[in-house]
Image (cartoon, rainbow, N blue to C red):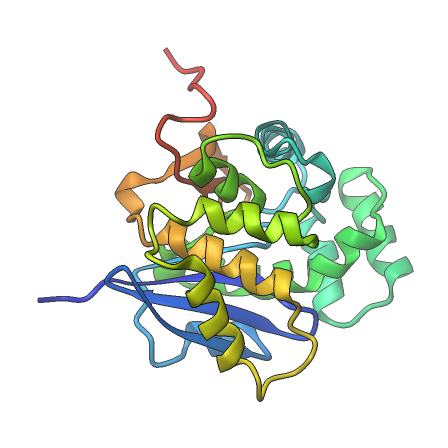
Length: 256
């Protein structure tokens, strides 16, 4: 019988953290310096949900990207957690280690928008993933953008009330995982024990985010919903959407 392997992936400062589930159970936590190293690892991922923007805006696709992000802000109820998305050229500059001023100027030139520091910090990660998705058809179908706050909202069945950096927020998010994990706290403990020999750059909220994405992914691609429901693709044919799971869709399709 073929196994089903998924991962929830988060950008953790100096690298990537991936929480891997196989056939619905936690298997391991992987930390890599590059996304390419994760994608080309020994795991044969059936689905990977990742917390960086995929489907980057450029000429003619700025509005479509804004619809993705504005829908996520509304659904999550935590608008400050969804950062403006850099243009493809700006993300490439960030990946090439350009300074903030150069990346912001490129973004302004491309889509006539400024770039805040939060968006600058995620730009290189977006550029990494984008470089693979533009050239790898398999990755384009397996690697899907997802936002942890949207996913926890869907799993919990109601709006989140607490920040993920607070004790109450961690508890609230663990509650969201109870229907899918026998003991979410024990799984979180196991993951953090696996990370004892890793860099201190991995924060506890990075782990929690990756875990939430992994639990959502193990529901199966056929069970996922998308923001917006009527999603489209960017100029490089990369999907512009965020995946989540919920008992009932959080947003209705506008298509007739």
